[in-house]
Amino acid sequence: MVTDEQLSAIKGAKVLMVGAGGIGCELLKTLALSGFQDIHIIDMDTIEVSNLNRQFLFRQSHVGQSKAKVARDAILKVRPNINITPYHANVKDPDFNVDFFKEFSVVLNGLDNLDARRHVNRLCLAAGVPLVESGTTGFLGQVTVHVKGKTECYECQPKPAPKTYPVCTITSTPSKFVHCIVWAKDLLFAKLFGDKNQENDLNVRSTDSSGSSEHVEDVFEWKKDEDIEAYGKRVYDHVFGYNIEVALSNEDSWKNRNKPRPIYIKDVALTEVTQQNGDPDKTSVSGDPLSVSAMTILGLKNPQDVWGLAENSKVFLEALKLFFLKRAKEIGNLSFDKDDQLAVEFVTAAANIRAASFGIPLHSLFEAKGIAGNIVHAVATTNAIIAGLIVIEAIKVLQNNEKNYRMTYCLEHPARKMLLMPVEPFEPNKSCYVCSETPLWLEINTKRSKLRDLVEKIVKAKLGMNLPLIMHGSALLYEVGDDLEEDMVANYTANLEKVLAELPSPVTGGTILTVEDLQQELTCNINIKHREEFDEEKEPDGMVLSGWTQPVVSKNGDMSKENGASTSNTSQAVSVEAEEDDDIEMLPAVGAPAGKKRKLSEDSNFAGSDLPSVVDDSEAIAMLDENGERKKKRVQ
Image 1 (cartoon, rainbow, N blue to C red):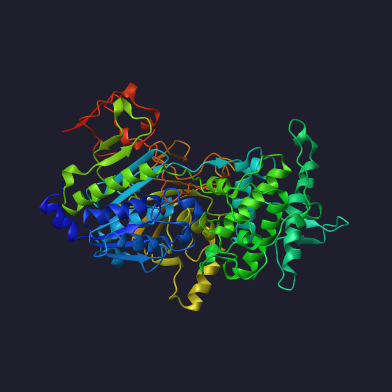
Image 2 (cartoon, rainbow, N blue to C red):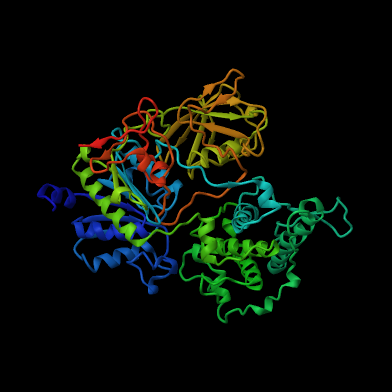
């Protein structure tokens, strides 16, 4: 029962919801029915058919429309007298800055990827606004509370590293469909539409018919006067035909495995695919460029159908053409996004054609999207439970009821008939580089690596900064922004291509770099250690970032990561991004940090041997006694 004090806190609150998907629909409903009067929603997605089974505010007629706006309209039919403000936008847009976040009493996350979660965490820290985080996957779920200076922030503990695969498997000997997806997403898509300056393991060159090495042609370079369909067929023949023939020439590779077959466009019966009649410019169901669709052009309506080779080939060629004709301005800056309809279509088709070549079963677009985005769809009831817990914690936060804050975990296999496991939040991790400003350490070859490598692989990919500024002492090495003078932009662009040790203010072993993101109001220091060699398989980036605690320097001078969590992928070279569906976050597997241990509620009665496996692997039960044994604690 809601008390008068709680009701007063609820009615006076201004709430920001980030995400209007599986959790978001349930959360908006629960907030409205609980008495909240002023709710703002940010979500960049449009509604898809696959959302309808669990995002109950949406109907078939809403497909292609803004999730935030449709969710608002649906709730106002039930609670017409409350204020709901929708934003069909990316939470990382400059408009949603620290001043914007300061307007709110509490922020509630129902996000779909790690990068956006980190961004919101940093804005909440800078604005001093409490954050309630959440995630679900299948029957599992979690709600965590993050209050600056009182509990750990979202980044106080490192998250699980993405699943990765060896380059040789991806490029030469795929045996699973996921290998084909990674090849299509991280190699082919990146080579065609991504940053041209980034290294890529695709074989991108071919010789002329005489075999002369003097006449080589970059098959991925589209010349403006070239017919786009001819260009698409040339790319197709190269990656699915010529490259497979080159692979077959190494007979030793196929002694103990089935040989792939080269596929050329002339051998595929494209006439079997019927293109719909109508205006070819009608390539999307909305004005959103992310909804431009090859499927719409080809009349392929059901994303759960498994296309044949001819259909996949036609989708591949049509999607490639649409990228160059409809989204030409984005080419060179694109990276795969599971919410980009055309990107998903292209990757699905490319992966399926490659799978057909290697004798791997083909998959539907729905299945391929799940693999590419590491998606495990949540169960609707789990979303409802988690949404209710978010609101409970939000009310505690609004009342400053610190002693009763709980991080709650929903378990798939309840122990002793428990469904929910509440634990006390940790105190802030004193060695967290985000909320405690602890320096990081970077091992890198300063004589070989360029500033671009550090910006792309470390500052953006590992540290999650969107608008970085990099300084060495008082020297500004790199900056991005719309207000920069042309000569400054030219200088910073030139710096990107310089080796670290040859920058105007040289970066060498012992250098301390200051890296700042003005939008996030986040600053951290990186201590540079020069290192000559790296293992190409285990350390593919050619650099190793260490944190959150200072690493130990061993006798031979190398940095040990025993006391620091490495943020590098140290086993394989091509990664599957840990990007989730609109309501997913896997429970992280970490040990207990410094500070207060988490405590189970008094009803838990957990003994170490009785814990289900998912609990042993989660941060919820990371409680060790002085002898390293698991111990039981109770919340009074």
